Length: 333
Image (cartoon, rainbow, N blue to C red):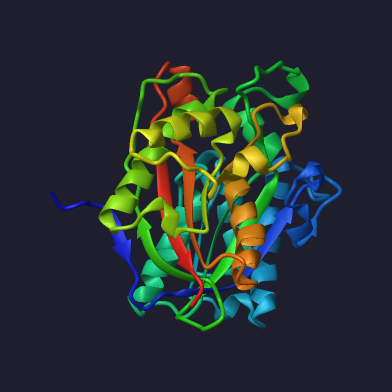
């Protein structure tokens, strides 16, 4: 049987720069030393949460561009998304930079789906510089998917904390000395019948396991080929389930496995099971992981971003939660 959804990039487009921004609570992140800009105000000193959300991504984009001495007019495409209705923070940010814009929604898996799309445009010879990324904002997302923070709703141990963060990556044709995109796998939407929006890790774990299996089998790889296999935001509950599912694939050693959501806040119990949000994996992938690749501490990594494809409407109607996971393989040549 021919495996579907596999992507190969013979020209290996490169990520020549990244930009990561984060909010005040993200100063508690285990990865905060690698973030480019952090704000003392959740709204970035703007009037609304959504305006602050938009500002996060705008600044991340501009930081990435500045690192390669470029301005928005130099970019061919902007490929980004978020979790707010109709991705309005991304769309409003897109109006400020004027880059041809492709809005992406893969929920918290958008960090990788946007990166894969930018790589496809580059591989096809249609882009010399594309900006890919994603973002999230705690107050904006809590109000939309759960309860306004003023309500003071109590959460169980499986709940995750939506991060206030954004990550952007500048993707160009291959340049030596930078992490390059070699292969990828587009995820399948998987619905295991879960309905609890406060247990996202458990809902997303099967999609992550499915994508890992398809990536390894389809590309003829093994888990031991990678210095790091990092899932997006399964957090402690989801990551534990993910490892159990992966054992059924014959993988029993997990020394090179980790999860951005589980590690984001350094196992701080204040954040329950860990972190989530479209900005979670973007912030970690485009700071810590990217820098370790540039430093050649990692030579080959597999990033699997996970997303829950629910909406406020589907949840209110009692629908289950379909989930997705996309994978991208980065190498240092």
